[in-house]
Image (cartoon, helix red, strand yellow):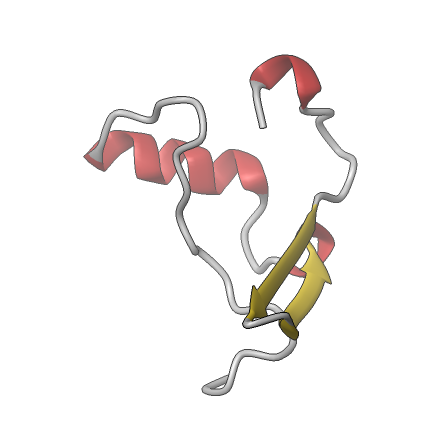
Length: 65
């Protein structure tokens, strides 16, 4: 997702599939920290480029909640 596609305040869907089977399906409204906080924290440790992916949360379906 690029910045021009992103809408602040609107939940983003997070979905993980393994071999066609849904393992996780949620959205960013379930995150403990908001997107702004996560981006800020990650950008302190690394340069974030378009399409940088980081799994900062455990949406429903995570086996070790």
